[in-house]
Image (cartoon, rainbow, N blue to C red; front, side, top):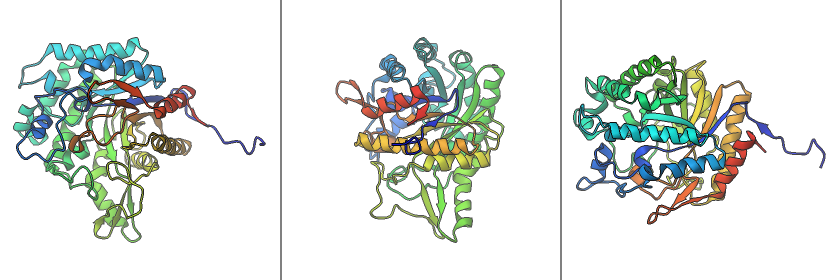
Length: 397
């Protein structure tokens, strides 16, 4: 084989951040004071199963950090559980706050960069009962919470995410059986919730910036909206409320997180279901590794000049070889975007652990690490070792 025939190694920029992501409710277990726990246990619930003990990560987080460090991924993205820290309005738990600070310290001791989200979907039940993000004082309440967690993230945490996937939060205001998996497209976001999320985000950005430490932004779910011929205007309108508005809200932020899994075709009548014969994942989404590249380019257009992080990207599959294939395709799309001048600073795989996937329960397995549902034993998958090798070399062979 001549040098011209050898595969080209794709090198990522110096300092590129590699990591894996999780969220509190999906892995901690026992979050009894939030709105999702209540939804899981409501009479006649459409939830597949309750979260229960999840991965018991509230107690086993040192093991997660150790796995990230051992793999060589370099960074761990996790979220704070607001309902633990403020289980009743104005009643703050210093013990819960200290717990999350210990998580940060554990990362630092292991040489792992912490990336912390202040909110990842779940809300204290009392906050939800008061109207959630649509309440007149929602931004004030979230600002008060943000100020309280300053000791957790004001030092040693280079990236703080205010709110994870606000567009999904707004779209799922009327959550139902088919709004997370199996349907075509996304419900129209509730405009009052969308406005409330934007206000809360901007207030939190001001607070975090006052600490003169972390860089702050939020993470938006991108859908790679793809128009059929003649449906370009329809697609732009459809994406406007579901994605574009939320990307543009980040125009003045320090960074913007992009989360991508699949694509959505849009015709003259709206979004289309996945066509028969197309490969799909355990969530029913099209297998489309290029989604992350589309998301990055779209974000660069809508929030020009804002550095980007891929804060979530992955695949729900029981076939770990297919996970590796998907991730390799996604990383090639990330590298191509960088080569074209898109400012991408890092990549976080979703998820570190097989975990609780909201309406669908534990069936969709996104993890680089399997979790035994009875013993909580962690088993690192081959795809994780492969991704760790890519991260250590900062290059894709």
